[in-house]
Length: 68
Image (cartoon, rainbow, N blue to C red; front, side):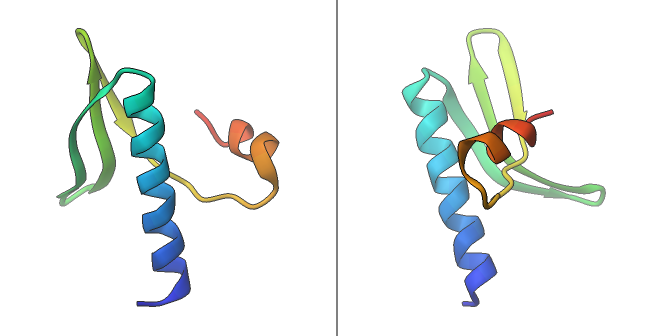
C-alpha cells in the first residue's frame, strides 16, 4: 500500500476517534456511490453528519481552514 493511501486511512481513523470522543455514533465509513464517496457517516441525536476527511500538512490551523 502506498504512502498517500496509508496517510489517508490514518487520517480517517483519527477523525472517527475524534467524533466518537465528542459523542457521535459512527454509522458507516467509506460509503461509495456513483457520485462519489462519503468518508464517515455519523449521528448525534437527530443530527446526521456527513464527513469528508482531508489530510493536511501545517498543523491545526491548516486543518481548521479546511472545514466547510
